Amino acid sequence: MNRYVIIVAGGKGLRMGSDLPKQFIPVGGKPILMHTVEKFAQWDPQARLLLVLPAEHQDYWRMLCREIGCRAAHCIVTGGETRFHSVRNALDVVKQDTNLGDDDLIAVHDGVRPFVSEQVITDCFHVAAESGAVVAALPMVDSLREVQPDGTSQALDRSRYFAVHTPQVFRARLLLRAYEAPYSSLFTDDASVVEALGKHIALVLSNRENIKITTPLDLAIARELLGT
Image (cartoon, rainbow, N blue to C red):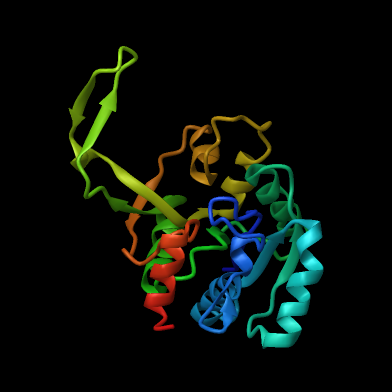
């Protein structure tokens, strides 16, 4: 069974308030993205890593890998107009693998989630092998209210809601078939693309540290987690 990991890193860092795209901001002596890529290589050195980057970021990334020394072998794929198109571009590369088998699995992960635990990755792949489609997620801890069109609000049962993380892992043939669909603004993540086929999505409990680093506060938390 082959394991593919698509790492999507196309952000511009606007919410970070930085000229440097957030995936390249250094934390603990390395760009956030490098921590993420190396996490998956450490989890499984045989996993096939595909890093999706905008064309204009690729030379800079290669320079960082030379100067810092990225410890993970990976293939660079050019990103598309949206996340959907970026993942589709990576899947086009996967389809070229003549060894692609029916039992193979593909994970899609955010480039700015470097703190996913190896246990969560393992659990996602294990459940995906059985169910076909899984996302890492956390139960909500805050109270929730739904705002009505008239401005009033009502409480919701938070036990029924989960915050979706990555990785999201799927049987390869299923994900490839799902991404044959035309783009829709309703596709908020890879699970929603697969769900459009009528496929049930299983949940795996994520780790609380598996934050998506998009704001200055997230960055401060990341530096604290790494002790820098």
